[in-house]
Length: 247
Ligand SMILES: NC(=O)c1ccc[n+]([C@@H]2O[C@H](COP(=O)([O-])OP(=O)(O)OC[C@H]3O[C@@H](n4cnc5c(N)ncnc54)[C@H](OP(=O)(O)O)[C@@H]3O)[C@@H](O)[C@H]2O)c1
Image 1 (cartoon, rainbow, N blue to C red):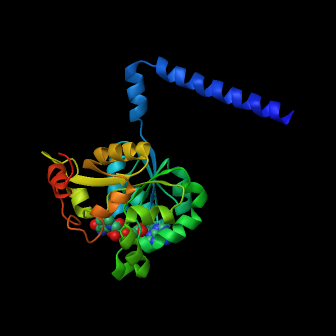
Image 2: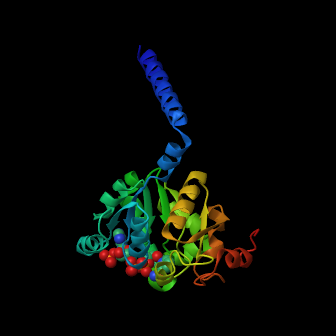
Image 3: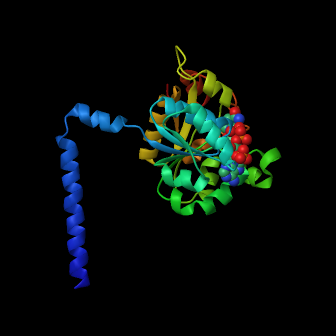
């Protein structure tokens, strides 16, 4: 009896999802494009220099952002200074709010956040800008650099669809050179999940920078802290050349 119920429920779900796909396909191309362009809800975990800067650029591009840190008063002030489309919350609230999450915290905070936010981050797209810096984060940073952050971050944030992003250039460049004329400031990306990488590409463009997809997560180590390209602002052409990628 139970098996019949389950089968019926599964059949209903399949029919519903097929119907939803048909409705989407029936939309005129312009409406479908508009649907793909609609603003995303983004939860920022760590609203300091990097989180605050990139979050503000996303609000300008039409996304809704919730800022979070260890200091809710700071986040409220930040949200108020940016204006509509912006709010503040705890890290748990921001992680629940965002369909996409942006982590920009000291690397040593990642293991604890991964534990505290385990339920909220599962299955979500996470752009991770956090860098392991031994002088600040201790031995765990040395381990992470030895493995590469593309291997280490998923161990701390299990179940998240991680893309390494926004870790390689300084926040002041991200802010001051967003949407600049000519070739834009390049932002290297690495991720294993194709949909997550696609979303990261869109968000980097929306912020006014040029995404350069380096490869899967294992290749994030090529632009980790301490590598020759780290901290060197480049155009996409220059970055591709420096990393030996196809032009
Ligand atoms: N600065 C740069 O130009 C740059 C560029 C690329 C990547 N990065 C990397 O990005 C990360 C952030 O750098 P940043 O310069 O933006 O640092 P920051 O200005 O010090 O900001 C760090 C943020 O993380 C928050 N935070 C710390 N521990 C937390 C926790 N357990 N839970 C929630 N939030 C927590 C801090 O909150 P409180 O202020 O309340 O403590 C603060 O909002 C670092 O890993 C850094 O290496 C930095």
